[in-house]
Length: 152
Ligand SMILES: O=C(CO)COP(=O)(O)O
Image 1 (tube, rainbow, N blue to C red):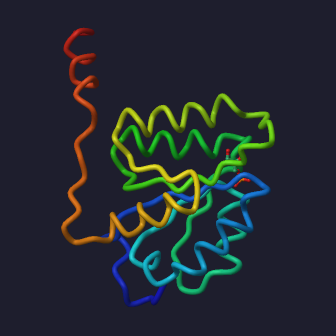
Image 2: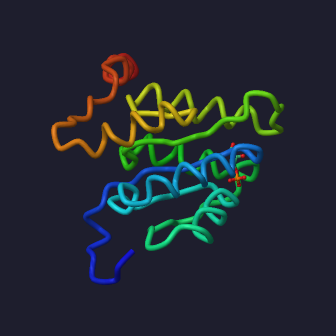
């Protein structure tokens, strides 16, 4: 990103792709660089490296690799309300050793009403949705508040 831009005011989005989907995510991200520059991006380790080596002026922070806890780091951001959207290109044809982490990430996104894109078509919708000035993020699902009330 240009150094004179204020990074702290940018909303944060996350990018994750399973190995066979990394070229797909990269191609999609290159096609959408202009919109992506409006965001701070966090990514699982290898995905983030591929993106930052190929995209220009896009602000990317790499977490741990997915199988080493990167998905869970992104899930933690969702639970603290620090993530605007998740772009997670899942490989539907290959078993993953950390499948429980993948499920946890999808589950926590669902609970907190975080927009999640698991394929390019949905990624197009989500990116255009969150860059629309009229977009208003829904609050977290009321079942969270019900749960908090029950457990005090
Ligand atoms: O495995 C992943 C997501 O579940 C992606 O992790 P990497 O970006 O480190 O390959």
